[in-house]
Amino acid sequence: AQSVTQLGSHVSVSEGALVLLRCNYSSSVPPYLFWYVQYPNQGLQLLLKYTSAATLVKGINGFEAEFKKSETSFHLTKPSAHMSDAAEYFCAVTLSGNTGKLIFGQGTTLQVKP
Amino acid sequence: NAGVTQTPKFQVLKTGQSMTLQCAQDMNHEYMSWYRQDPGMGLRLIHYSVGAGITDQGEVPNGYNVSRSTTEDFPLRLLSAAPSQTSVYFCASSLNRGKNTEAFFGQGTRLTVV
Image 1 (spheres, one colour):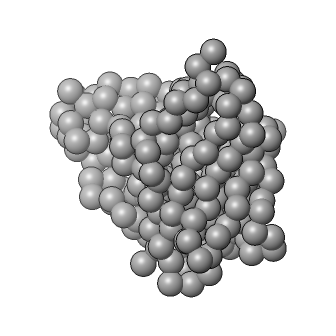
Image 2 (cartoon, one colour; image 1 turned 90 degrees about the vertical axis):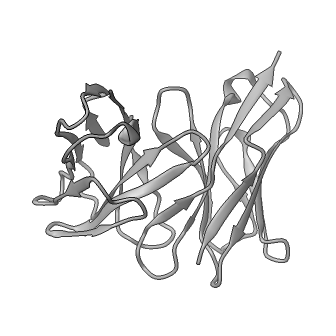
């Protein structure tokens, strides 16, 4: 069965520092992976998605993620954090089969310090 | 283009009361779903629909009912509210149930059961 684990429920970085949010997946078939962002009191917004076309995926707001099959990982990075990046980030995987159902990780809250 | 609209945004219920959370999308999306978000648990799938007249259970369906009489609307009914149903509820839709299809989320309904 597919599952997603996000390491670290809270990550704190200084403005301008590298952002690294970790996501590991478990899947018996090639997965389709997503990163979503949730700003305070809002719904979720797609940051980027991996669909097997390329292992390095670029998303909105300067974020990118690299799919590493050998490590079953899909970590999210951004070279330089902005205050506006403070939010909760969710990694998600779709279930096998053509169901469209998303399985979410527990979420990681990113704090950006001035 | 409104996207996915949820009403109400906030609701307080007494234990045992029933209510319906409304969800509507104007993108002619085939697939719709309901999630609940609880601290430290990410988003968990309650029910989903792959088209008008077709619904199925997700991970945590107990205490909730859904129906899909039109493509646009996917209401979630709480039959007899319990404190354990205090949560933030999100409705999502996607064009189809393909594994790489982006899900669009509503702004959420924050429900408190006292």
